[in-house]
Length: 501
Image 1: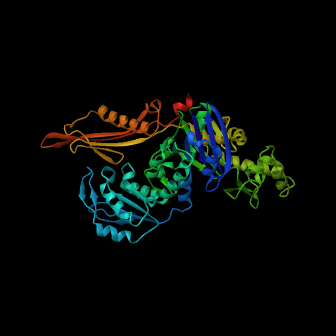
Image 2: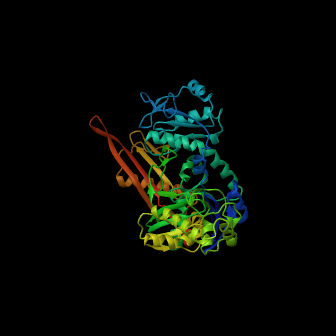
C-alpha cells in the first residue's frame, strides 16, 4: 500500500509518498491551490491513503478573513449570553430533555439580519441536538450549509468555550469544505491530520474544522519519532516562515486542553507548541541589523528580492540554492559581509535558543534544521539529531499516522439514553446499573467500531485511552432509579501498523 502525506507550511507545501519503506518527496511553493498541485504531481493519489495537514483554517483566523458571524444562543431561562451573540427562546436541560421549544417567528426574525456565516449554540445541545437541528432547517433558507456551524458538533462542557469554538468553526467551515471537494477529485481515501497527533476522515473534520489547528507542529513531532525512533526530546522544526517547538513524550507530542485561539477561549485539544517567527525566509533588516520577524518572500538564493536567513548561511559557508547570488547580494551591503552574516546568524540562534528551554536533546527538522542544529545544540549544551528527510518530516508524520477518533459518551439509564458525540440512541429499558468497567468497555468498543468503519485496521484500534470518567446514581423515593455516567475515550494517536509492516 502507498501512503501519501501532504503538509502545507508557511512557505512551501511538502508532499511525501512512502511505499515499501521507500520515501519519495518534493516541495512546491505555497499558492492557494498548492495541495491540488501536489496531488496532481503525485499522480497515483487515488490508489493511496492520503493524509493532509493544512494550516488553512488557522491562517484564515489569524488573517481575520473568516468574515462576520451571526450567533444564535439558546442559554435557557435566566441566563444572558448577549455578550457572545443573540439570545433566543429554546432550552435543553442537563439530562437532554427539551424544556422550552424554539419560537419559529423569532428565529426567522433574527436570521433576517444576515451575516457572512452563522453559529447556532444551545446549552447542553451536545446531549440533545434536536433544537439546533430545527433552527438549521430554517436557516438553510438564508445561509448555505457550508456557512453554518452547530454547537452540538462540538463536545465537552463549558458553555462559553463551546460558543467560542462554534463561532470560529463557522468562520472557517466553508474553506475546509471547498478544500475537501477539490481534494476528493484526486484521492478516494483521504484524511485530515488533527492538531492532537491523529487523523480523521474528512467528513468528521468538516463538522469541527478547528480540530485541524496546530496540525503542522504535530506532524513534525510524529515525523521526528518515525525517522529517529527517539521517544523523548524537544523537536525544533525550522521552516521557511517560523520555528516551531514541540515536546516529544513517549513517542507522541505533548498535548494541552482548551487552547486559546485568536483571543477566544475554546474547547480545542491540541499539541502543546510554541513558535518563534523566524525561518529560512525571514528577511534581514539592515537598518537595525536584526532579523525581521516576518516573511517578505523567497531568499535571494531562490530568486527572491530580500536577503534572508538562508542567504546569511550561504555567506558563512553553506551552499543552499544559488549561494553565489546570496554572496553577491551581501557584498553590496558590506565589504565585511562574512562577519556581518555571522553576527546576524548568531542573533537568530540566540532567539531560537532562548525559546528552547533546557532540553537534554533536540531533534531538528524542517528546511534549515540540518544547518542550524549544531549551532543551537552548542548554545544549549545538549545533544542533537538531524534525521534523514528532516526537511519533510512534517509530511512524513502525516503519511505514517493512524486514525485517532475521540468519543464522548453519556449514558442515562433512567431515561434509557446513550449519547455518542451528540447522537442520541436508546438503550435497554431494563438497564439500570452498569459497572465502571462495563461503561468504559461500551465506549471503547464503540470508538473502535467507528474507526474500523472509517478505514482503520484492527491493530491500530487496540490501544484506547480513557481521558475522563464520572458516574453517579439517581435516587428517587429512597431507591436507585437509574445511573448517569460520562466517559471520554480516544484511540491513541501514533504511527499506523500498516506503515510499520
